Image (tube, rainbow, N blue to C red):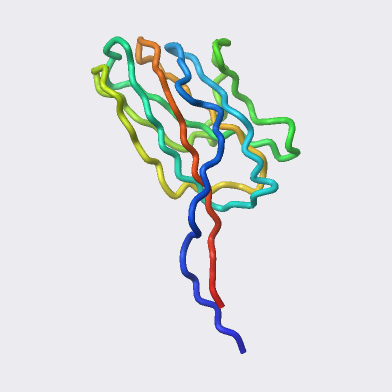
Length: 149
């Protein structure tokens, strides 16, 4: 008889989010590149959001990170961006948010332990009424659960 011991998550792999030094206008979103989790079959994502503003943003508002899934690998959940008028992503797509300080410094926030589905997905960052353009980089690390027997 073999005993299997859960050892926690495996080492993370940095995925290409397609959001690197992207300028996101106030009240708009920015859509990145597809991450093919239907092939990777990872279970967990950690998201590092790095942002700055050229002019102080309005405090108390948010930069929001959404994952838009495409179960068939092509047709993603609702959400638009990249300068187009923002189509609000579905409420269940939100995976995390940050409330930027009213300054022009570069900030980082790590959102950890986000469960992900075995489908292709695309990240969308929404600049929610900060009253300024945000420069954002999104680093997405995915990992599998692993066990040793």
